[in-house]
Length: 208
Image (cartoon, rainbow, N blue to C red):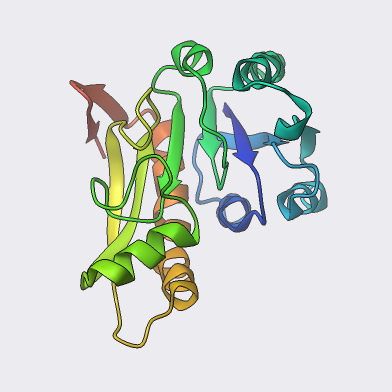
């Protein structure tokens, strides 16, 4: 059984999707053992505690530099001994020291179809505002491995979602979460825990 650690910063809707999937026995071969938040006020912490999962806060605001924050976060991660780290609405960019330590063992869910509307600055409603401003007819979500390039790691899974003429950033965000993020993130986690994902030349191959 693999040890899963989830990193959060906000409301924790993607964490809840993982917890719900685990309760339904849809995550095979792994269990969420710990949740780490960069924000002491994150509602995601309450979701974790309610499910009986231990938590740690590494408050980004308590550190003067990202290097100091990364060092503390890495120490906490090492103490958790994760087999898989899941970024579920984690709003801090991980430093190279963490990425090297857990190479191809960190996955993230991003609310667009990478390589569109991704990279530095594309998070939360910013993504959906850009989607609507560009006028694309399809968007969606991507689960990918994390490397040194923001949203640049190997793509594990994607799902498309229609963009409606009546959409606001908020309605589009909710549709992407409900129809894509909450579906593909637990599936990708389960595939990883079953050792059904391999990576070659930054391309993820699913052996399902």
